Length: 202
Image 1 (cartoon, one colour):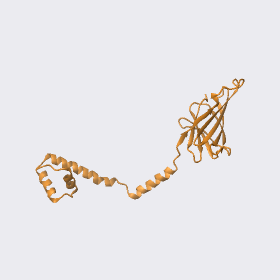
Image 2: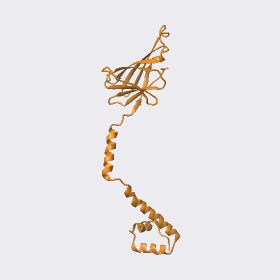
Image 3: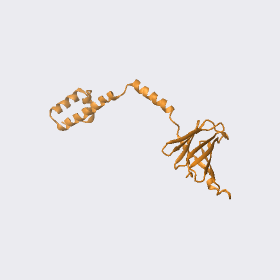
Image 4: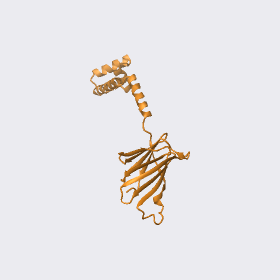
């Protein structure tokens, strides 16, 4: 007698095969055919796995609750961030004669991102570690100060060192110790967070 194909085996282990085919399979198994005995064991395991899968399916009401929870949390996820583009750096321009040896070092940088212009002016006395920062956030499209702006100062490892809010004119100021790998994050309503690397501080 020939061995059986996959479909008769699937129907046999599920108990839905034709009576004549199922009888032939039983007769063949009674003859102790090792190949068909192996096939029966394999298809029986597949049937058991398919049957047991239903036991691992969570209740529909629980699935609905979890999906609603994720939908709510996704709505409150922090927005993506954008790295600002440097458009002006006063370090790239030579200082006037007589100013180069001054005691107070002042430099300006301007960044743009997310339709915002961020004007930053740094000041530090020679050999001093404390940096004074005065900045302003402008809406580039409407040429006006951007309101409801929060400015955070942090390290490269996201350690928050300071935070401040801009006034109605979009202006803010901070003082901090000069370190390597410092970042400013500008958070304005309806905009992605703008990240600005602070360089030339040491």
